[in-house]
Image (cartoon, rainbow, N blue to C red; front, top):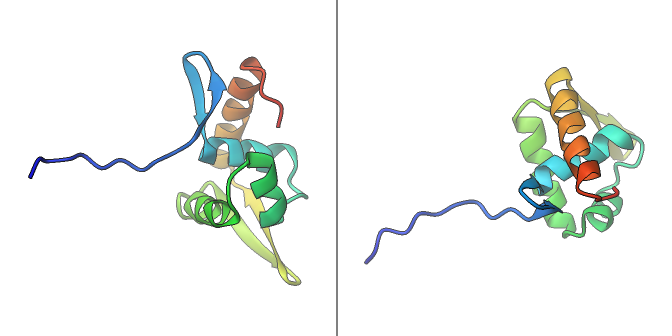
Length: 101
């Protein structure tokens, strides 16, 4: 059996040589619209499934780019300084590529 390298699949948003992964697009959304954090709304904006958004948000929190605050029955994701800097960069790439979030 051949040795097959496995890579995590990531959808890429953007054009040309500058691409942003779904995680980067999620960070950019959390940066620009911190109040709209419902999983369903994020999934619709990113054009991915709700399950994918749940995995992405868990990865963002695990990486230390955001923290979770529970407000009632809803989670609120607050970007850390590192997360905000990365989100800003991702947002700039998306804007340069003509992608509106």
